[in-house]
Length: 109
Image (cartoon, rainbow, N blue to C red; front, top):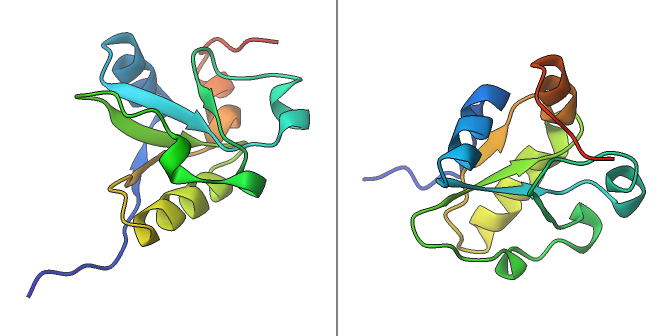
């Protein structure tokens, strides 16, 4: 019997940045508009958790969906919620934008 329990895989900011650069990742930022207005990930899809609908995520062939937030908590919530609705979105960026910036990766303001 296969375990169907939703699971979320932690990715490092460096893994996500490499995936974005190579066109293998769609980064979905689930922070709220007041947060993304201050600072955001370059090229991320903005989909606030307060109005989260995984069907609104653009389906791009060959790209994995990776969720991100401020610290990594809401991105896990988003991944699990998407899986509960039947989407195979099992990855998030551990540490969120805080870890992204700590790794020296660029943000937009």
